[in-house]
Length: 449
Image 1 (cartoon, one colour):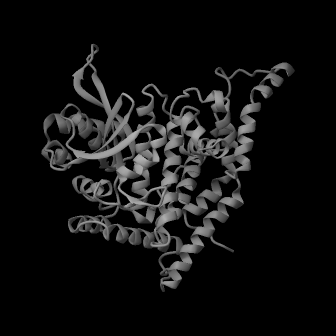
Image 2: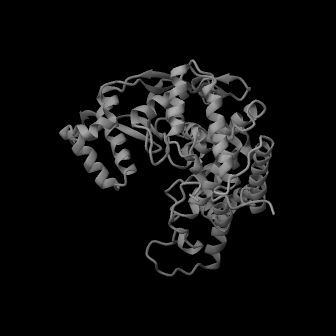
Image 3: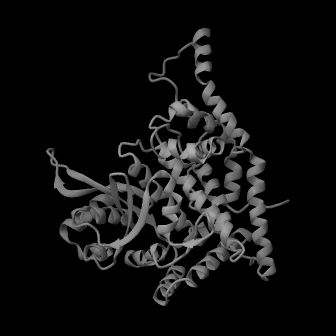
């Protein structure tokens, strides 16, 4: 049986190994009574915030289990009523993921034109070992952005396009959103395809350095065998969706490119600065457009990941010098979860196997598991910490205050929360004991007794 998610092979570290080490020199430092009292007083604000997170149930193992098992049982009953049960080679989790993948794809197919129906079929026939070519991944992904398709529910329950969903969701931030289809700006085209090729070669198994060297050589030499992967961009064969965000005097265009990785990254133009380096010119989003339902990587996951990456653009539209990191990773995960909650809420009656609530729960569990698999570094703004902090703040202070603080107008979030690094350490201590239950869920080994 294959693993049901892209779970790192490396085992997690102990609490002592995982937490950042105090002190810069390793020398033993004895705190005086006065220093300890001062530190305790300083951390009072942080402790109060984390206690509030505990009260909200973020670290309750039994609640995590119950929430997941309730959703799983609901889908089991739907499938039993439809006369479907797992084969000897699969378990209930595998059957559920396979059925929600097919069901939601059929739902999308009903709403699109005939040529796009065939693209969806091609996507469903592919998998992570035999993915679609990059050009076809882009053509498939373009379906999700088309302005003439109303594929998504907004918070009022109306079925709208991606453009309209984003415009409604972010209207309180002062940012207007729309998606247009156009070719890539020639000034940044070569830099963009270089990034896409690097991700392609890393997908093929090369490390970052070797992938960079191979991509650089392929482009410089015009190696047709390798350049063919991104010829559709070089020759403007496929229009690329661009997210256009406008706020006050700021207008940003961000290409949305289907590829082999998920990130929001800066682009560089042909023009060079005084040091001979290519000047930065905007950003682009690459998202992993691969069909792998056994890893829960389906259309629902692709769309929610796009929502996450798009959210990174919004703070830059509000405040150009806004510090990235905790602020944007937190809001991006909140935006992703909000999207999945909204889709499930308004699709459940018409499409009980839409899978968005299942996907939402697994995404939160994966975030927690991935935290446990890596050395904790306060400078690495991981999804688990960031989502818990952002969602906890919103639940406590309300939507209006949350948007003001996390999207713009308040750069120093420490003033509101306290020392964020200390808060992250406290969250670490509460996430560590949850690793096993996260792993059980991701491997499909958690069932009602």
